[in-house]
Image 1 (spheres, rainbow, N blue to C red):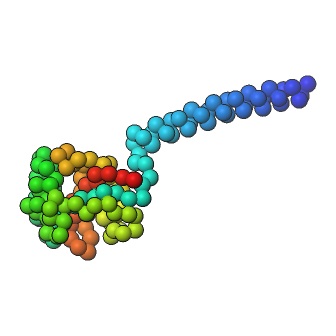
Image 2 (image 1 turned 45 degrees about the horizontal axis):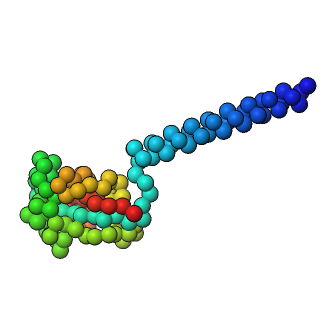
Image 3 (image 1 turned 180 degrees about the vertical axis):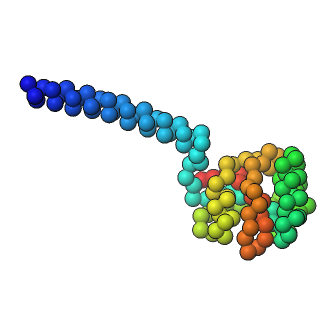
Length: 135
């Protein structure tokens, strides 16, 4: 008799465990798609670089009011990526630490409706970052 009880418990545990695991896996996949970004090794990134905090804050304010990222980058950015702020595809490890952390944490968006970082301070100055793609 004890083997039958164990068999029932084992088979019951296995099916419950299997169902439970399947539900958890499904839930995790849904959470990953909705709340978390998928892992990426490179990002198509744009930025606006300003030496002064006040200028960067002003640029961020214009973007938050709905201005195009390209337009604000052309007006405010103080580096070679002035033409719309595009840096192109950048791989993990090729960017300064804080910049890289912010870039890989952003959802992809468009220049007309950008999802941007807060101001990111690096040795180069203050950056406003947006990501157009991830892979």
